[in-house]
Amino acid sequence: METAFTVLALGMLVAAAAAMSLRNLIHCALCLVGAFGGAAGLFLTLGAEFVAFAQVLVYVGAISILIVFALLLTSTRAVETAQPWVPPRGLGPTVAGLVTGLLLAAVGLSPGLPEKTAATSAVSVQELGRELLTRQAPALLAVGLLLTAALIGAVVVALREPPPTSGKEEPPA
View 1 (spheres, rainbow, N blue to C red):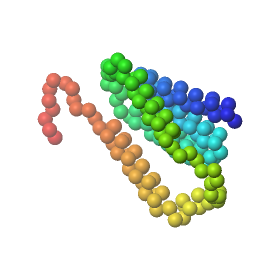
View 2 (view 1 turned 30 degrees about the vertical axis):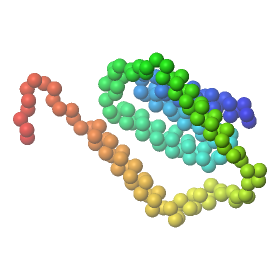
View 3 (view 1 turned 120 degrees about the vertical axis):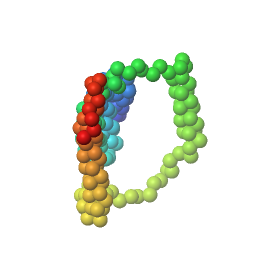
């Protein structure tokens, strides 16, 4: 189990680093899908099956497809040809040292986990589904309508015709 966790964690880190460093935005989005998939695998190794399947459905499925559609519907030529930002010399090690110091301080100052934890009842996926489709149905429908409206708005913005680039100006209609 530890080997699977280590392999998934390293794969997720590599995919996330590739998503941050590649120049082509479509390749970045696909690497982000790999990082999301690695997170779902990590949840599976930790015994959180519902969270893993929700990760696959929401992030690997919906969010990544939304990102790819947004990239394909908008013009990415300007982003690909832009000059990359070059950080000042020594900024990376300074930020890495600061974050490492903060993490070590947080771990060192934490009281630790209690020895005995209160027994919690396991909630099944069936109970969660029943709750979502009964008491939480209006909220679920509202989120669905909001996402649909956002997607329609993105398509409308992407389909607008650019202004004419010729030297002659057309009279307004």
